[in-house]
Amino acid sequence: MLHASAVAPTLDGFGPQGSRAHSEDEFIEIATLIERAKVTAGFIELWTERFR
Image (cartoon, rainbow, N blue to C red; front, side, top):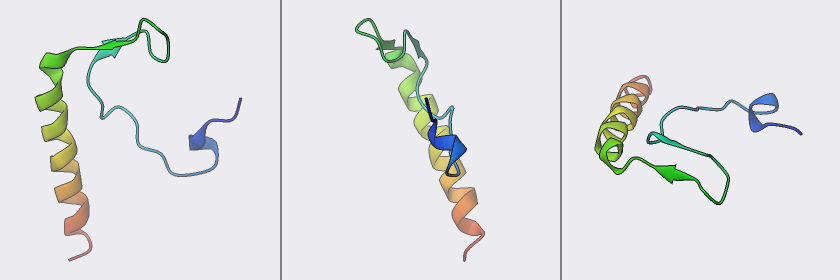
């Protein structure tokens, strides 16, 4: 199996907490959505400052 990170820059770990990824039993912890959105927004803000 070829993973995207083998051929392109890849970010991982920005999503909500959960378990059983990519299975019929996959779930996310709803309570982590806001926290993870804030982390992602902060990253985008800092990253885009490099190009101003």
